[in-house]
Image (cartoon, rainbow, N blue to C red; front, top):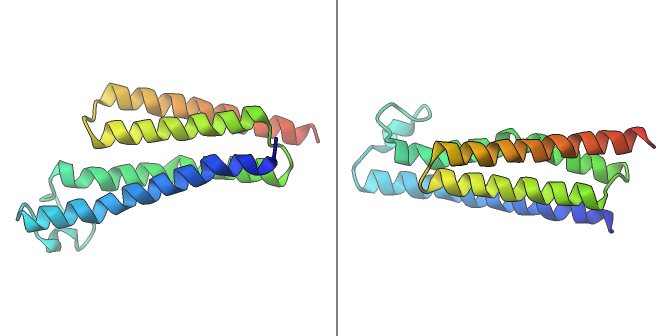
Length: 140
């Protein structure tokens, strides 16, 4: 296995994050054009006047910047230390797939239990990836 394979899921998640980021201004502009809010409602972040459907893409974008930081660190550490393995790459893809699933649920029908399931499973995949990387590193 080529060690650069660990960067394919990294790139996929980064691109997904950018796609969700593009939704933020689109939804906000639409809400302003529909006169649900004014542009002033974003002067200091999001005012209380901003409806939940307008806040949702921004909240999902923030989710994609929180826990995935540890994912990016684990993948870079695995690569730099020569600890990339088929298991590490599989766990990385599992994490990305579950994070995308979390986003899709969050941005569409937003069932909290379904989101929780995707988030919990992605957290487990990340934890196993981190432990696997740490064990591989300690064996060197």
